[in-house]
Amino acid sequence: MDQITTLSQFLSIGGSQFHVYEMGRRVQHIDTATFEQIEVLKIPYPSPLQGHAHFALVFWDETQDHFIWFLKLPLDEQGLLSPAPRSQFIKMVIEALGSSPTRTLTESQQDKLANHPFSFKPTTEKLAIFNALVRQQLGQAPSSQYQQAYDYLASNDKMSAWKQVGLQGLADICVRPDEKDHLQLIQDNLSTAPNEIQVALCQCLEHLTIAPALAHSLLNQIINGNNNHSHYLFRALASHPKLSKEAIVHWSQQSKLTADLLITIAARNWAALEDTELQALYLEALSHQDQVFFNQLFIELVAIPSLRPLLLTQLRNPDRSEKFTQAIGGLFKVTKS
Image 1: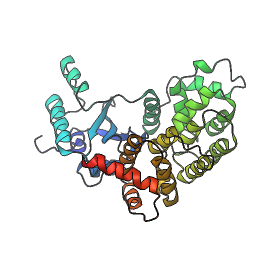
Image 2: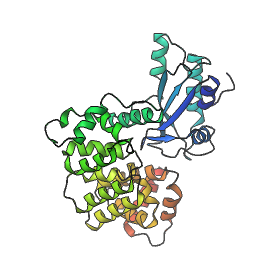
Image 3: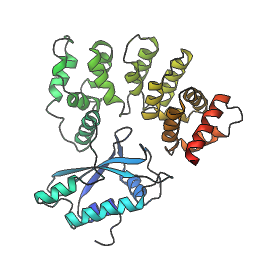
Image 4: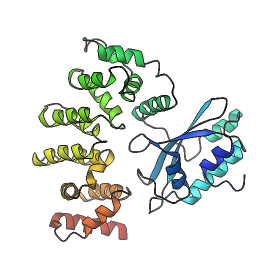
């Protein structure tokens, strides 16, 4: 056991199969090969959040009993897992479990393993989509809330029973768009259901790769609609960077790139910022916020591996505005102090 340096090794040697899920920015499945490369520090964590990797490990053995760890591990300046905290967690796990990750634990061992410094609790929305994804990818039936959610979305009465619809049931439907008439129900209810149901659907869709027709429908609602939950519709476009760009440009033309929207872009729709034109537009809007706000979002964005080289290039852009130049100067003052 002394030679074990990664969680992948520990689970494999213990006879467990496992899946890994990103739990920070968007709930996404991480394929095993990619996770192994992350663990041996070959590649940076793809979706860092506040300097940490947030992910879930779902593992099981021949008994088919499933176990889940939600882990939050710090990253270094290059976005790689910090070796010392990673090794500390692995050592703690080996001391508690020996060679078997699915062994039966005493109550004190369970408490120790559940309350370590690298554990975190995902939000209710992320837990719902995570549970739905795990059930779907393991070939399990949807949750007990599924049928009530389906019956509601399929009904003509949208006002009387919406409070009884569980978020978990909506998540079950969203992760299975090709089953039954799920995709059509989602699309219909995103324009006819009460705002609370529309928001809940969007909170699920923002983590998924949605169908092009649904994505275009969302964009049309954003551009032509007059609703008070357009930011949620926008977040649901996270899997479509080009359409996200169109929404951002639309808001920019209306001078509506507010602080809340800038945060939303950084948190969910950051892939749209791989577009050079949009980078300049976003950074210009960001530079008109106060310095602390600018610093926080710029540092968060530049930590994302896919954006880092692009944003650093923008710092050397000879055509950058005076306002952006001033904001970058303020950022460097903070980082040097």
